[in-house]
Image (cartoon, rainbow, N blue to C red; front, top):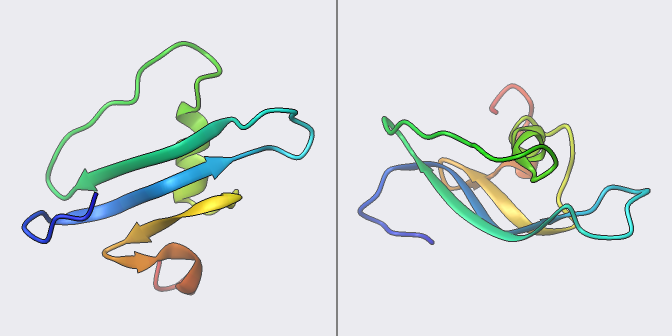
Length: 83
C-alpha cells in the first residue's frame, strides 16, 4: 500500500482485529491508506467494523496482526503526546 508519491497520513497494513469474547475476527487483513487533504466516508450496515477502525486509530484497541502508521510511524511506537 505504500506509495512514496502519496502523502498518507494514516495507513493500515494487513490489520486483523479479534475481540476477546468473539469466536471470529472482526476485521481481517485490512489494508487502507488515508491521504492528507482527502475526504473519505465509512459507510455500511451495523457490525461491519466502522467503529472498530476508529477505535484502532485512537488506540483504544490493538490489532492482533498488522500495523497502523501515522505519518509512516507505527502508532504503537509513538507516545500519546506524539500521536
